[in-house]
Image (cartoon, rainbow, N blue to C red):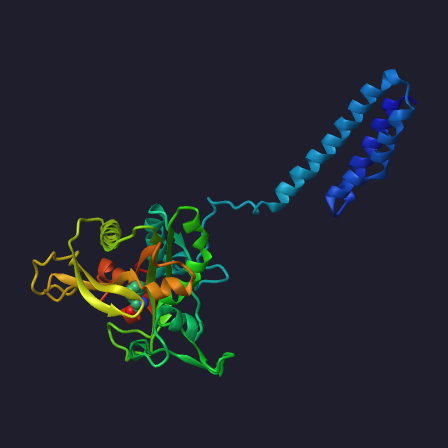
Length: 348
Ligand code: PHE
Protein backbone atom coordinates (compact mmCIF):
# COMPACT_ATOMS: atom_id res chain seq x y z
CA UNK A 1 0.00 0.00 0.00
CA UNK A 2 1.32 3.42 -0.85
CA UNK A 3 1.41 6.07 1.82
CA UNK A 4 -1.32 7.90 -0.04
CA UNK A 5 -3.61 4.91 0.16
CA UNK A 6 -3.08 5.09 3.95
CA UNK A 7 -4.37 8.60 3.94
CA UNK A 8 -7.41 7.70 1.86
CA UNK A 9 -8.24 4.83 4.23
CA UNK A 10 -7.87 7.01 7.30
CA UNK A 11 -10.04 9.66 5.68
CA UNK A 12 -12.86 7.13 5.15
CA UNK A 13 -12.58 5.94 8.75
CA UNK A 14 -12.59 9.43 10.17
CA UNK A 15 -15.51 10.64 8.10
CA UNK A 16 -17.56 7.64 9.21
CA UNK A 17 -16.64 8.20 12.85
CA UNK A 18 -17.35 11.92 12.55
CA UNK A 19 -21.06 11.24 12.09
CA UNK A 20 -21.21 9.36 15.39
CA UNK A 21 -19.32 11.90 17.50
CA UNK A 22 -21.17 13.99 20.04
CA UNK A 23 -18.35 16.53 20.32
CA UNK A 24 -17.42 17.03 16.69
CA UNK A 25 -14.09 18.68 17.41
CA UNK A 26 -12.82 15.41 18.95
CA UNK A 27 -12.17 14.26 15.40
CA UNK A 28 -9.24 16.66 15.23
CA UNK A 29 -7.56 14.86 18.11
CA UNK A 30 -7.89 11.38 16.63
CA UNK A 31 -4.97 8.97 16.98
CA UNK A 32 -5.03 8.08 13.26
CA UNK A 33 -4.34 11.64 12.26
CA UNK A 34 -1.45 11.81 14.70
CA UNK A 35 -0.04 8.53 13.39
CA UNK A 36 -0.08 9.84 9.84
CA UNK A 37 1.85 12.92 10.90
CA UNK A 38 4.21 10.67 12.85
CA UNK A 39 5.00 8.69 9.72
CA UNK A 40 6.55 11.60 7.86
CA UNK A 41 10.13 11.25 9.22
CA UNK A 42 10.27 7.57 8.25
CA UNK A 43 9.47 8.25 4.56
CA UNK A 44 12.10 8.68 1.87
CA UNK A 45 12.90 12.42 1.73
CA UNK A 46 11.50 12.78 -1.78
CA UNK A 47 8.02 11.64 -0.70
CA UNK A 48 7.76 13.63 2.51
CA UNK A 49 6.58 16.91 0.97
CA UNK A 50 3.65 15.47 -0.98
CA UNK A 51 2.64 13.21 1.89
CA UNK A 52 2.72 16.06 4.37
CA UNK A 53 0.57 18.16 2.07
CA UNK A 54 -1.96 15.37 1.72
CA UNK A 55 -2.30 15.01 5.51
CA UNK A 56 -2.66 18.74 5.87
CA UNK A 57 -5.40 18.69 3.31
CA UNK A 58 -7.26 16.01 5.25
CA UNK A 59 -6.74 17.84 8.51
CA UNK A 60 -8.06 21.09 6.97
CA UNK A 61 -11.04 19.31 5.52
CA UNK A 62 -11.94 18.05 9.01
CA UNK A 63 -11.39 21.46 10.60
CA UNK A 64 -13.71 23.09 8.09
CA UNK A 65 -16.38 20.47 8.73
CA UNK A 66 -16.18 21.03 12.49
CA UNK A 67 -16.33 24.81 12.06
CA UNK A 68 -19.29 24.63 9.68
CA UNK A 69 -21.25 22.37 12.02
CA UNK A 70 -20.47 24.54 15.05
CA UNK A 71 -21.76 27.54 13.12
CA UNK A 72 -24.93 25.72 12.12
CA UNK A 73 -25.51 24.66 15.73
CA UNK A 74 -25.40 28.30 16.85
CA UNK A 75 -27.86 29.48 14.30
CA UNK A 76 -31.48 29.95 15.18
CA UNK A 77 -33.81 27.35 13.76
CA UNK A 78 -35.17 28.38 10.39
CA UNK A 79 -38.41 30.31 10.64
CA UNK A 80 -40.86 30.45 7.81
CA UNK A 81 -41.78 34.13 7.86
CA UNK A 82 -44.42 33.58 5.18
CA UNK A 83 -46.39 31.06 7.25
CA UNK A 84 -49.85 32.39 8.19
CA UNK A 85 -50.28 33.33 11.84
CA UNK A 86 -52.72 30.97 13.47
CA UNK A 87 -54.85 33.08 15.77
CA UNK A 88 -56.55 29.96 17.12
CA UNK A 89 -53.27 28.36 18.11
CA UNK A 90 -52.58 27.22 21.66
CA UNK A 91 -52.20 30.75 23.06
CA UNK A 92 -55.08 32.84 21.74
CA UNK A 93 -54.42 35.43 24.46
CA UNK A 94 -51.03 36.32 22.92
CA UNK A 95 -51.93 37.92 19.62
CA UNK A 96 -49.00 39.82 18.13
CA UNK A 97 -50.48 43.21 18.99
CA UNK A 98 -50.55 42.22 22.64
CA UNK A 99 -46.85 41.45 23.00
CA UNK A 100 -44.83 43.80 25.15
CA UNK A 101 -43.42 47.13 24.03
CA UNK A 102 -40.35 48.95 25.25
CA UNK A 103 -41.25 51.18 28.20
CA UNK A 104 -41.37 54.86 27.18
CA UNK A 105 -38.80 55.83 29.80
CA UNK A 106 -36.41 53.16 28.55
CA UNK A 107 -36.87 54.44 25.01
CA UNK A 108 -36.21 58.02 26.06
CA UNK A 109 -33.20 57.10 28.21
CA UNK A 110 -31.67 55.52 25.12
CA UNK A 111 -32.17 58.80 23.26
CA UNK A 112 -30.73 60.88 26.08
CA UNK A 113 -27.73 58.59 26.33
CA UNK A 114 -27.22 58.88 22.61
CA UNK A 115 -27.25 62.69 22.70
CA UNK A 116 -24.72 62.81 25.53
CA UNK A 117 -22.72 60.00 23.97
CA UNK A 118 -22.24 62.18 20.91
CA UNK A 119 -20.98 64.95 23.21
CA UNK A 120 -18.35 62.57 24.61
CA UNK A 121 -20.04 61.53 27.85
CA UNK A 122 -19.91 57.97 29.17
CA UNK A 123 -23.05 56.43 30.65
CA UNK A 124 -22.93 55.04 34.19
CA UNK A 125 -25.55 53.30 36.28
CA UNK A 126 -26.70 54.18 39.76
CA UNK A 127 -27.82 51.76 42.48
CA UNK A 128 -31.09 51.00 44.15
CA UNK A 129 -29.55 50.84 47.61
CA UNK A 130 -26.75 53.12 48.69
CA UNK A 131 -25.10 54.38 51.86
CA UNK A 132 -25.25 57.64 53.75
CA UNK A 133 -21.72 58.54 52.74
CA UNK A 134 -22.57 58.68 49.03
CA UNK A 135 -26.02 60.15 49.66
CA UNK A 136 -24.80 62.94 51.93
CA UNK A 137 -21.24 63.22 53.27
CA UNK A 138 -19.43 62.94 49.96
CA UNK A 139 -21.82 65.63 48.67
CA UNK A 140 -20.92 68.12 51.38
CA UNK A 141 -23.97 67.58 53.58
CA UNK A 142 -22.34 67.03 56.99
CA UNK A 143 -24.32 65.17 59.67
CA UNK A 144 -27.24 67.23 60.89
CA UNK A 145 -27.21 69.50 57.83
CA UNK A 146 -30.74 70.88 57.38
CA UNK A 147 -30.70 70.31 53.60
CA UNK A 148 -30.73 66.56 54.28
CA UNK A 149 -34.44 66.99 54.97
CA UNK A 150 -35.05 67.89 51.32
CA UNK A 151 -34.11 64.33 50.40
CA UNK A 152 -36.56 62.29 52.40
CA UNK A 153 -36.29 58.74 51.16
CA UNK A 154 -36.69 55.12 52.21
CA UNK A 155 -34.19 53.48 54.56
CA UNK A 156 -33.40 49.95 55.58
CA UNK A 157 -33.76 48.61 59.09
CA UNK A 158 -30.38 47.00 58.65
CA UNK A 159 -27.46 49.23 59.59
CA UNK A 160 -24.05 49.63 57.98
CA UNK A 161 -20.77 49.40 59.94
CA UNK A 162 -21.22 53.02 61.11
CA UNK A 163 -24.62 52.12 62.53
CA UNK A 164 -26.38 54.09 59.77
CA UNK A 165 -29.26 52.70 57.70
CA UNK A 166 -28.82 52.18 53.97
CA UNK A 167 -30.93 54.39 51.71
CA UNK A 168 -32.85 54.12 48.48
CA UNK A 169 -31.01 56.98 46.74
CA UNK A 170 -33.10 60.16 46.51
CA UNK A 171 -31.02 61.51 43.64
CA UNK A 172 -28.45 60.30 41.14
CA UNK A 173 -25.87 62.66 42.68
CA UNK A 174 -24.97 59.69 44.92
CA UNK A 175 -22.82 58.57 41.99
CA UNK A 176 -20.75 61.76 41.78
CA UNK A 177 -18.03 60.65 44.19
CA UNK A 178 -17.68 57.24 42.55
CA UNK A 179 -17.51 58.70 39.05
CA UNK A 180 -14.95 61.33 40.03
CA UNK A 181 -12.75 58.61 41.51
CA UNK A 182 -13.27 56.15 38.68
CA UNK A 183 -12.30 58.62 35.95
CA UNK A 184 -9.71 60.70 37.83
CA UNK A 185 -6.96 59.42 35.57
CA UNK A 186 -8.63 61.28 32.67
CA UNK A 187 -7.57 64.54 34.32
CA UNK A 188 -3.95 63.42 34.67
CA UNK A 189 -4.08 62.50 30.96
CA UNK A 190 -5.22 66.03 30.11
CA UNK A 191 -8.78 64.92 29.36
CA UNK A 192 -12.12 65.65 30.97
CA UNK A 193 -14.28 63.56 33.25
CA UNK A 194 -17.60 63.49 31.39
CA UNK A 195 -20.34 61.11 32.53
CA UNK A 196 -24.09 60.87 32.79
CA UNK A 197 -26.16 58.67 35.07
CA UNK A 198 -29.72 58.15 33.85
CA UNK A 199 -31.24 56.03 36.57
CA UNK A 200 -33.97 55.40 39.09
CA UNK A 201 -34.35 57.40 42.32
CA UNK A 202 -36.76 57.26 45.24
CA UNK A 203 -38.47 59.74 47.52
CA UNK A 204 -40.91 59.50 50.34
CA UNK A 205 -43.50 61.72 48.61
CA UNK A 206 -47.19 62.32 48.88
CA UNK A 207 -48.25 60.99 45.51
CA UNK A 208 -50.11 63.05 42.97
CA UNK A 209 -50.02 63.76 39.23
CA UNK A 210 -46.62 65.42 39.59
CA UNK A 211 -45.06 63.34 42.40
CA UNK A 212 -44.11 59.71 42.38
CA UNK A 213 -42.10 57.73 44.96
CA UNK A 214 -40.03 56.16 42.18
CA UNK A 215 -38.80 58.23 39.28
CA UNK A 216 -35.79 58.84 37.07
CA UNK A 217 -33.06 61.42 37.00
CA UNK A 218 -30.30 62.20 34.59
CA UNK A 219 -27.16 63.24 36.44
CA UNK A 220 -24.43 64.91 34.43
CA UNK A 221 -20.85 65.52 35.55
CA UNK A 222 -18.11 67.35 33.70
CA UNK A 223 -14.70 68.16 35.20
CA UNK A 224 -11.55 69.48 33.55
CA UNK A 225 -9.22 72.48 33.73
CA UNK A 226 -10.96 75.83 33.30
CA UNK A 227 -14.57 74.64 33.25
CA UNK A 228 -16.98 77.51 33.95
CA UNK A 229 -20.71 78.11 34.33
CA UNK A 230 -21.09 79.30 30.73
CA UNK A 231 -20.12 75.81 29.59
CA UNK A 232 -22.75 74.31 31.87
CA UNK A 233 -25.49 76.49 30.44
CA UNK A 234 -24.39 75.95 26.85
CA UNK A 235 -24.26 72.17 27.36
CA UNK A 236 -27.76 72.04 28.84
CA UNK A 237 -29.21 74.28 26.18
CA UNK A 238 -27.70 72.21 23.36
CA UNK A 239 -28.85 68.99 24.98
CA UNK A 240 -32.45 70.20 25.38
CA UNK A 241 -32.59 71.62 21.87
CA UNK A 242 -31.39 68.32 20.51
CA UNK A 243 -33.91 66.40 22.60
CA UNK A 244 -36.89 68.56 21.67
CA UNK A 245 -35.66 69.16 18.13
CA UNK A 246 -36.09 72.95 18.24
CA UNK A 247 -34.42 76.18 19.39
CA UNK A 248 -35.22 76.99 23.01
CA UNK A 249 -34.54 79.88 25.37
CA UNK A 250 -33.18 79.08 28.78
CA UNK A 251 -33.41 80.93 32.07
CA UNK A 252 -31.03 80.48 34.98
CA UNK A 253 -31.89 81.56 38.53
CA UNK A 254 -29.72 81.29 41.64
CA UNK A 255 -30.54 78.36 43.88
CA UNK A 256 -28.98 76.31 46.67
CA UNK A 257 -27.55 72.81 46.76
CA UNK A 258 -24.83 71.83 49.27
CA UNK A 259 -22.82 70.09 46.53
CA UNK A 260 -22.67 72.92 43.99
CA UNK A 261 -21.49 76.52 44.35
CA UNK A 262 -22.89 78.55 42.75
CA UNK A 263 -26.10 76.57 42.25
CA UNK A 264 -28.82 77.27 39.72
CA UNK A 265 -32.34 76.40 38.91
CA UNK A 266 -32.64 76.00 35.20
CA UNK A 267 -35.81 76.70 33.20
CA UNK A 268 -36.48 76.52 29.51
CA UNK A 269 -38.99 78.28 27.31
CA UNK A 270 -42.04 76.06 27.00
CA UNK A 271 -41.35 73.76 24.03
CA UNK A 272 -45.09 73.60 23.30
CA UNK A 273 -46.68 76.99 23.46
CA UNK A 274 -43.45 79.03 23.51
CA UNK A 275 -45.22 81.33 25.96
CA UNK A 276 -48.05 82.04 23.54
CA UNK A 277 -50.84 80.04 25.15
CA UNK A 278 -52.26 81.22 28.47
CA UNK A 279 -54.00 77.88 28.99
CA UNK A 280 -50.99 75.68 28.07
CA UNK A 281 -51.04 72.55 30.25
CA UNK A 282 -47.30 72.08 30.09
CA UNK A 283 -46.21 75.49 31.47
CA UNK A 284 -49.54 76.66 32.97
CA UNK A 285 -49.34 79.65 30.68
CA UNK A 286 -46.10 80.88 32.24
CA UNK A 287 -44.03 80.28 29.13
CA UNK A 288 -41.24 78.70 31.26
CA UNK A 289 -40.77 75.22 32.65
CA UNK A 290 -38.50 74.61 35.66
CA UNK A 291 -36.57 71.59 34.66
CA UNK A 292 -33.50 70.88 36.66
CA UNK A 293 -30.96 71.78 39.31
CA UNK A 294 -27.34 72.39 38.46
CA UNK A 295 -24.21 74.27 39.40
CA UNK A 296 -20.45 74.28 39.66
CA UNK A 297 -19.24 71.27 41.65
CA UNK A 298 -18.40 72.34 45.21
CA UNK A 299 -14.66 72.22 46.05
CA UNK A 300 -15.42 69.86 48.96
CA UNK A 301 -17.01 67.35 46.56
CA UNK A 302 -13.88 67.38 44.39
CA UNK A 303 -11.69 67.04 47.50
CA UNK A 304 -13.72 64.03 48.69
CA UNK A 305 -12.55 62.33 45.49
CA UNK A 306 -8.96 63.58 45.90
CA UNK A 307 -9.23 66.06 43.06
CA UNK A 308 -7.52 69.41 43.64
CA UNK A 309 -10.17 72.13 43.28
CA UNK A 310 -7.44 74.72 42.66
CA UNK A 311 -6.46 72.87 39.54
CA UNK A 312 -9.76 71.51 38.23
CA UNK A 313 -13.33 72.74 38.16
CA UNK A 314 -16.50 71.14 36.94
CA UNK A 315 -20.23 71.32 36.65
CA UNK A 316 -23.03 68.94 37.54
CA UNK A 317 -26.72 68.83 36.84
CA UNK A 318 -29.64 66.65 37.79
CA UNK A 319 -32.65 66.57 35.52
CA UNK A 320 -35.95 64.75 36.07
CA UNK A 321 -36.31 62.33 33.18
CA UNK A 322 -40.01 61.69 33.77
CA UNK A 323 -40.58 65.44 33.45
CA UNK A 324 -38.70 65.63 30.17
CA UNK A 325 -40.67 62.75 28.74
CA UNK A 326 -44.01 64.01 30.07
CA UNK A 327 -43.38 67.29 28.33
CA UNK A 328 -42.31 65.63 25.12
CA UNK A 329 -45.36 63.39 24.87
CA UNK A 330 -47.84 65.62 26.77
CA UNK A 331 -48.36 62.99 29.49
CA UNK A 332 -50.48 64.52 32.23
CA UNK A 333 -49.77 62.18 35.14
CA UNK A 334 -46.34 60.93 36.25
CA UNK A 335 -47.92 57.90 37.91
CA UNK A 336 -48.69 56.35 34.51
CA UNK A 337 -45.03 55.41 34.16
CA UNK A 338 -45.02 52.98 37.09
CA UNK A 339 -48.64 51.93 36.73
CA UNK A 340 -48.16 48.98 34.34
CA UNK A 341 -51.27 50.15 32.50
CA UNK A 342 -51.07 48.47 29.14
CA UNK A 343 -53.26 51.00 27.30
CA UNK A 344 -50.80 53.67 28.31
CA UNK A 345 -47.65 51.71 27.60
CA UNK A 346 -48.76 50.46 24.19
CA UNK A 347 -48.98 53.98 22.83
CA UNK A 348 -45.21 54.24 22.65
N1 PHE B 1 -29.39 66.14 42.97
C1 PHE B 1 -30.15 67.35 42.87
C2 PHE B 1 -31.61 67.03 43.20
O1 PHE B 1 -32.05 65.94 42.99
C3 PHE B 1 -30.03 67.98 41.50
C4 PHE B 1 -28.63 68.44 41.21
C5 PHE B 1 -27.72 67.59 40.62
C6 PHE B 1 -28.25 69.72 41.51
C7 PHE B 1 -26.43 68.01 40.34
C8 PHE B 1 -26.98 70.16 41.23
C9 PHE B 1 -26.09 69.31 40.64
O2 PHE B 1 -32.32 67.85 43.70
